[in-house]
Amino acid sequence: MPQIVVLPHAALCPEGAVIDAPAGKSLCDALLDSDVAIEHACEKSCACTTCHVVIREGFGSLNEPQEKEEDLLDMAWGLEATSRLSCQVILADENLVVEIPKYTINHARENN
Image (cartoon, rainbow, N blue to C red; front, side, top):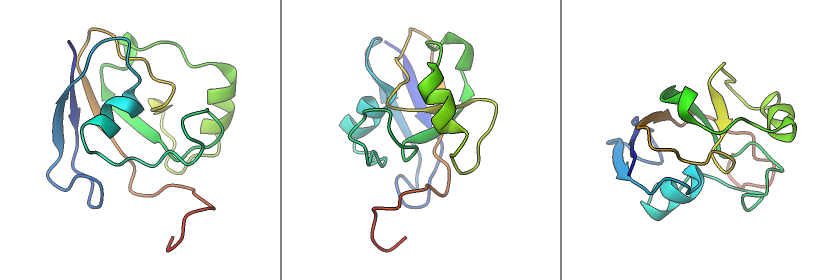
């Protein structure tokens, strides 16, 4: 079972988090199940960028992004070479270190 280290995020997990989640689960679901309330405005359907994360360690172990995800990531705030949409990341057996960017582009959210 991979371990996910979530780096501190001022609003979502100020202390950071360490999560154990089964391989085969999406990263977004693993975060939500562990009370890290990452945004997912499109309900995890790969139609927005609100669940954007940067994989700091373990990127090579993840499933390949589909073209739709790559196209959406081009619009994400703070895009990096190891950026992914957490709703599309399927956990493998390798541990991950994940950073949730400070900002997100969510046109539907109040109090942006």
